[in-house]
Length: 511
Image (cartoon, rainbow, N blue to C red; front, top):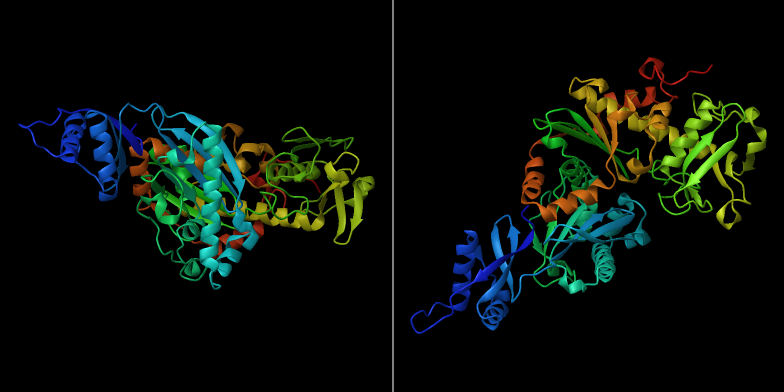
């Protein structure tokens, strides 16, 4: 383990008439003797470091930032530190999740999250890109995300009994657009052919350069991206899953704003991204919501009695339904024959469960008496149609990608499912819908927030920092926007479970 920031114990011989070595030179020689490394000391920190070194009697701990260009000595302490806090950040489009790690021992000492304040200027990436083109739009988006990160850093520091200005480093994992807005780089070309970012792999920089109120010497590591639709959050997922280190061929699926998928092993990796995310993270259904308190995450319907049972994430009154709940619900509706293979309601099956809305009939999941706020949780035909498109897109993405490398799903050793989608999803239900391939359930492994997990590894391991930079030259990216095979497969996937039912032998087929 070689953390992004670490301490080196130093004990130098005090200066004398016979040894007139300068204080900074003396310190560099002592660190080199202790650690065998060449290093630099920035001028902006030099006076304070020299004063601290002399005040401590020329012994203590040198604090070093381990940057790709070489080690940089940025501070000196009289005692070996027991705490060097650093912040890992999942820079999401809708939410920011972060952890505070003690780089001395690798422990996570605090976790927190906040809504992305940029939502005020657009709920989705495309709207924000257009807003950035307005006068002062980019500056405003930049300032508001920096302010949100500073607030989140304050939250973490308070939880850990620390001060925000003691946070020694930040690692950031996010999609390409979010990174551009953070760095105040114009995202104009990200959504225009040939979809070229301003930068894929930013060099580490000082947190203060973009207005982050962390330690004055704190470096920022931004996870590299492959292109406009393949960001550092997916690179983090690869690092966190370890699929790039394995002999066996595996798949990684991360569903957020988009569905991003990687297939490969230590020898090769191929990836793509497509718009299968919004309905699956509760962004399309009228009662849809992110996985959180009050969200229905699990549904059961007895195929005979049609009795419905549900579970919310916090076991409280339901406020809506998240992606895993929608998948459960639609799969159960199919198995109970309340919807047909096209995803259309069969009202005659349980007429008491339906209500009329301006958009047409809607299935009542939870009545007003049981729901939080007295508003029933319902699934309308419009919501169901959106779900059918998302599930079709998901399976089409997976099959298109696996076909590109001449493999079958059965050749996969493991399928890692990331994010809140992966944390709450029941693979059996997703298979029933024809969203995931019909494989043994042990093939699927949930790995939680892999974007944040990868950012944490960046703070702790030099090997992970080296790996993420190597990955960008190792991955082949498949552009689905111009892929005719994807469109054909998408059309074939818009039935439950599929137009070719032989692909899903474990799923019952009804007339």
